[in-house]
Length: 186
Image 1 (tube, one colour):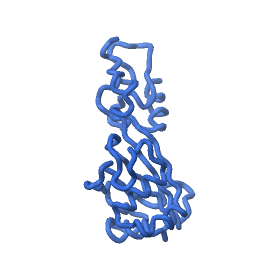
Image 2 (cartoon, rainbow, N blue to C red):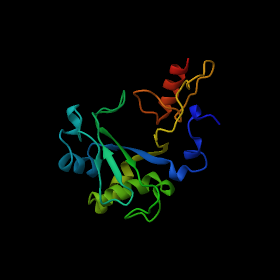
Image 3 (cartoon, one colour):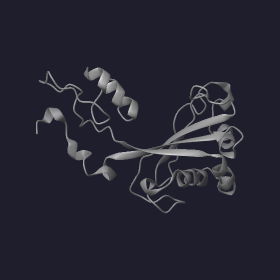
Image 4 (cartoon, rainbow, N blue to C red):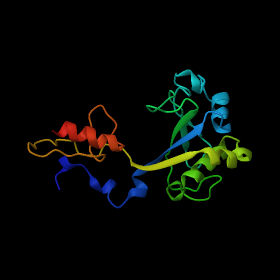
């Protein structure tokens, strides 16, 4: 295979070595988790409309290397004012969690939430937090620089699309990158 088409070996059949996990939790503003983040990790209150954590907060003692961020609220169009969206990621997919004795990719959204609560000292409040939370997870490919360009060098009639191609000045991880790469290919 020509090197202009990248190195698919890093993604094909080796997903445990070529990916990371993201998660997104939706909780009421009154949740003990939102209150803890607001009190101990925020530069602005969630209700302010400004960036809350000011960047990603990484838990360095986490076996999973779990991180979280709270962006401006509302995050989504028509998001109720009393709802907070927390986004996070897990970089180390090969080890068991400190609280959840499974790898992250084998864990449910609830278990990821439990691992986060453990690290933030919210074990006592976990069941109440989980009862009100909605947690979604997504497995994402690493951006290792071995992806082909949307239009590889020397190619004039093929455009490559999706999250496994390289985009100039952009991140190619999510479903929306499939739309952006398609637009760029055309």
